[in-house]
Image 1 (spheres, one colour):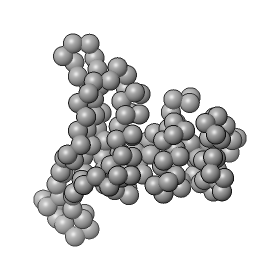
Image 2 (cartoon, one colour):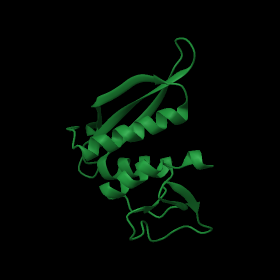
Image 3 (cartoon, one colour):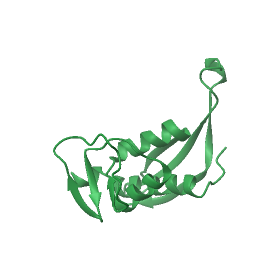
Image 4 (cartoon, one colour):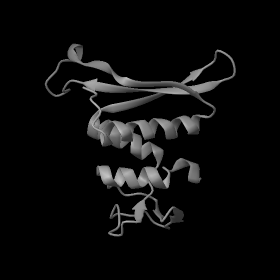
Length: 139
């Protein structure tokens, strides 16, 4: 079940970037701790304790806050391997007609092949964090 959650390092960085969503569990000094009920307070006040978001939650947060979408693909040229790309939605859906919506591929595309889907998810989340943390130009 732990493979569904972001790593401790990712969770700490997401906390620094402003992710404060309720989660099912939390990390304490890189030791996994789970609670019986969903936390409703997001991160606690202690620097070394933070919520442990699901990968799904983290990806949703990047979509909603930054309009950055991740796409994991399979490369079937030899043994199945995985890669990812990050896509930026451009435009305001409130003010644009359906014909005016468009997608713009972010300059950051990682075609390095990963052995597993889970490894690819981790690398993709790390790249999303890097984009926002380092304010890499993606518009």
